[in-house]
Amino acid sequence: MALIGSGIGNVRAFELPCGIWADGESVGSPRTVLVKWRSVWEDKFYQVYVNGQYGGATIDSQQRQMIVQMPTSLESPVRIEVFAVEAEQAGIDFSSEIGSPVGPSGRVRISMLRGQRLPVGAIAQVYFDNGTGEIDYDKVLNESPIRIWPARQDKAGFGMNCFAVGDFGYDSAAAVGFGRGVFGQGQFGLDADSLEWTSPVIGTGVYRFAVKVTDGLGNESDSIETDQVMLTSAARPAEKMNIFSFDKQTNQLVLGVS
Image (tube, rainbow, N blue to C red; front, side, top):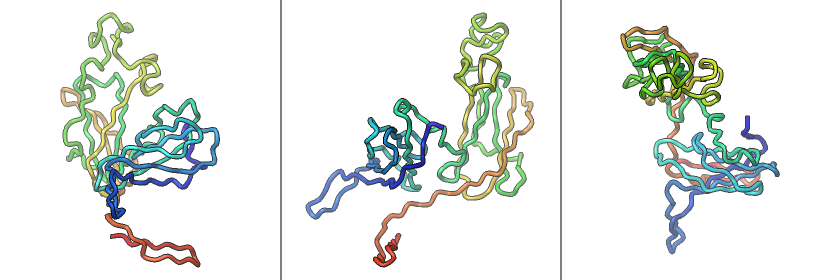
């Protein structure tokens, strides 16, 4: 793993003002925050991720702050993470290393391998157990069918692509190249790629999911079922936070949230 999370602390995010009134009150700048942190690393660069997405990198090993863009979200909190990386890796997006199948607001993200053996016209359907422990195959979770091959050019096979340009019997001139997809999962020398589907908001609970693939003639594959997945709905952000009390003897701060 290229990202280093240890040795970094005191991560703080400050809303930047876009204007200050005469009485000292300020108007916050939307979608922009200043992130500061402390670190024990002296020879590393740093990357900031916002909700699991790459937000930027420092330009030297001494920098301990960065301005990042925030998503416009009034219904869920925003997660900010700071990681140390080697200098030569500062510009590489490592969001796949910190990604989680569980979304930030009661959603699940399902990743499926798209091998060339899947037929043209195939679709995937997602099912779940609705928290009962038994998957209901009579009700589809996805609102519309998930097309395995939305673009004809992505499917490699005899007569399916640039005829006589690719490997014998495959016509794989436009297939995912070696080392470009999910390594070791496709046909030798070709690799396979994957597709992802994110569910609508399901809510807090423990669920199991399943995927079935149906070809153009209506033939269904065997289902592939997941283990139990816990989803937690995101907490609504506090509109106002005030200091309720502070005990100097115990150094304890009590905040009041409205």
